[in-house]
Image (tube, rainbow, N blue to C red):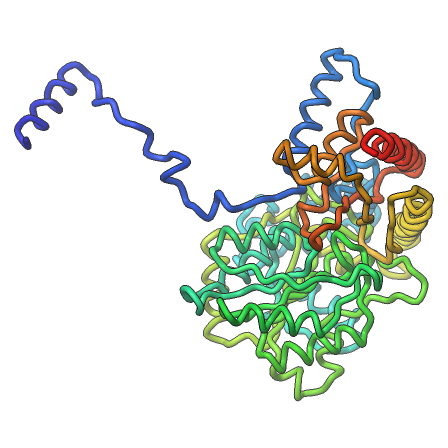
Length: 500
């Protein structure tokens, strides 16, 4: 047999051909965990929306003239203008000859020079250290210290990241271990941001759901955390608790008392805390205020601040900046074991460094123009205008959706999304199931085909059994948002009549 295989190889070589074999990489041979990954924010509905846009360009007639994408928190794609100062400094960093141009204000030039002097060869095109540009990490630490009213931040605990998502996945990699009943369980809120469920699936960890209370404006109940934890301990080792504050997709802002309760729970149950705080400037509702987990942790005293392990995350993509494409972010780690921290530094070094332009932009977010500097007045006006407009649109969205019979929307206290509950007729639910679709997926697909509005079904974020939702951004300009909401109102009434 060996001789015949050798002869076959010789013949193939002589004929300059190879024996016919199947693909090495197939759906059957690929990593099974990758097949479990699902990311609804860019799922089938968004893919269909892209196809429809192409069809419209090709002249295909539709009952609408454009696709309105309200599926993702991409502010600039929705028409929000960049902050002038940020783009001036980025222009100077990427083309330093502009430093001689008198059209640029001196504070922008000074920021650019400082960043460039911290880069290899004075170029933003050079690799940086794996943990991030040193002066940027110092600026991040100073920003955290100001934000948290004097609570110290060590630049050595700061890691610059490729958006917050990169930091979140990196920490989850460190935490995932064990097999069977010892496999790491990761507690995530339902509804949740699909980055978490997708990352947990890819890493082969165990997803542990805890449900937010929709009847109490998507609040977090400690009793529900306890229920979830106890149930999970029957089949895995829950060791991580993930919190998104302000919430995505639900838009709630946690009270200080709630954060304190969560920290006490994490300390009692020996859980690693992950605080996703990328919407920290997006707080709109009266009486609501952003409290960082780190600030509350340290205000609770050394019993907690010396014990609870915490990683918190921020980004250039949200808040008033909306600079998603630069992929800038940071994470701060607190009370991490020094040996584990060395492993973290090793892990991030494998990917060399986060994008230097994203690091530079993160520096501008945490080191923005100060009173007395030439750019301060313009910067503050632009920042205030953006956040004020978002607050108005949050209120508008809630008000209009709540006028529609069959739609119930909690106040959008913060972040960039509403997550209303929709009541669907039994016939629609049955038809969706017959097509192998989740009922709210069926609803959102019909909405897209008939109105051009692209939303994400609640099933992509998780929801209580028997309830249906969709997530919608509040980012479109007010005039377009009004069109969207009125179209949605008309569609829901027509859909309900059709299937009643």
